[in-house]
Figure: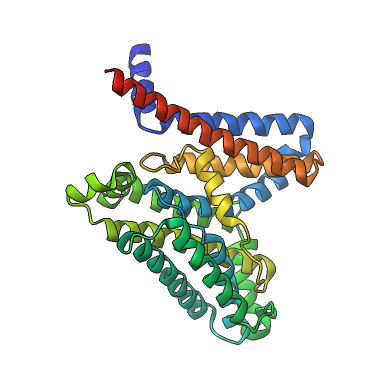
Length: 338
């Protein structure tokens, strides 16, 4: 029986990226318990509920950024798409457009940005940093001008209090089973995209492109289409986070989503998604988002200065990337010796 258990554990750990997931998971638990010892309020039901809700935004952004990073690219526009989506949806609703229609129009606008990113990087072979830097400014600019360079009015002023409350409850304030809807939305999307990345041909192609784009192309992978799909996932996740921020504030804020692209990178990298492409699991991104949020929440609970919070999180991100580089170099040296 013990031998069977050991062999099962070995098989699980042999999955590429599983070790990083386990490390991130253990780190998440250790950090949470450590902060709980310093301040028992960390263990309170209310704090756990708020922690899960706040973590959901990082998880969604992390999922989108992870899809792109696995293809060995990056999406700098993701935070601006969050802000653009919050502004478009809130502007439409504050002007009386039905919430369902506003949501559909906003999703379409976000997917256009993802499609443009995919074509620029996949077809025209622009460096992803430059391509998405450009669309980052464009999306943020659209967010500014959509309501005349000012934050929107309260969404309830356009669609009515009942419809406005329904939108806010669905995306942010409502609960199911004692847990905020925000977390359930993030969890459902996580499961959908986990299935796509782990169980479908699209997922295999995403990993193949990140490992070796030329080899993937020669083996029949449609690099342009697959790259575009990854960027579409990134933009879709950003749009959903835009809805969450609009629901949280009850209005559109032009600065919503600032620096969220870095939160996405951090969630993925901490969870073992390599920024060099070809490896990483969404389970790791889930744990990485948890580590990020627990650090932020715990440091606040122990009254650490904001500067200290940023330094701690920044060091962790750098160490995670450094560990990935070291592990890759070790594997290359072993291959050369063999």
